[in-house]
Length: 263
Figure 1: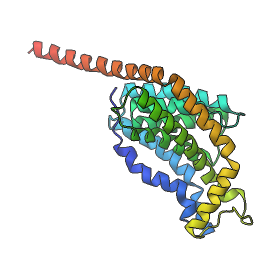
Figure 2 (figure 1 turned 30 degrees about the vertical axis):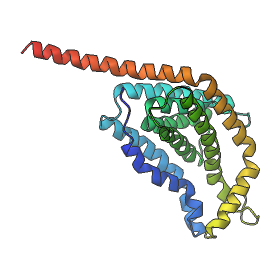
Figure 3 (figure 1 turned 90 degrees about the vertical axis):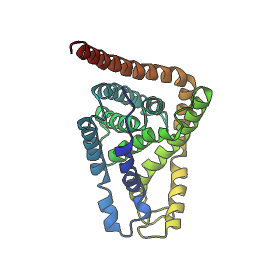
């Protein structure tokens, strides 16, 4: 099972980020309502991307199987935190799997696990596309940690990334909720076409007043789980990856030797 190339995913990152940051660039309320359809497009793109990767042989059958297993596992972990403020154990599993399997795999894993979790829990709505893309970006972002780092430093960097990712997820979710939640008559309301600095100030004041109680527990539980289970989980995932690649390589090599001997 080889690591997937991030080429196709990398092309989607700028448009995905713009999908979250649109409130700071939209100049009229009419465009703001059109931007709310972002969740439909992103969910469709995620499905088409998987089809493209499979058809181009960038995602082999073993990768597809592994992706399905891990997506089901992460989707099953997410409901464990429902009803608890910010207690979401799914993020440590996503981050570790993305670290072991590569950033493109992490992107697909984040998107599919969040989509499957929504189907299992009934959490389908206009927020789903944002959740799918936020989880996909978190899985892809693990690639910023150099691949050659191992041992305690690797776990430390993954824990730091987990804390940052927990905050990024909270910010991303508030970005899709803030423009509609306060109306237009408060000091923290979104104002289409307002100066960038003004909307930034309003948003971050709104975010830290409303979401800090969720972000801190989410970051804490993610860091704790990575520190406790990170080493053993990474070793298990890497063994599975290398074992699959090893068996595939021997199979093709043996087949080539047989063909040569019969010539």
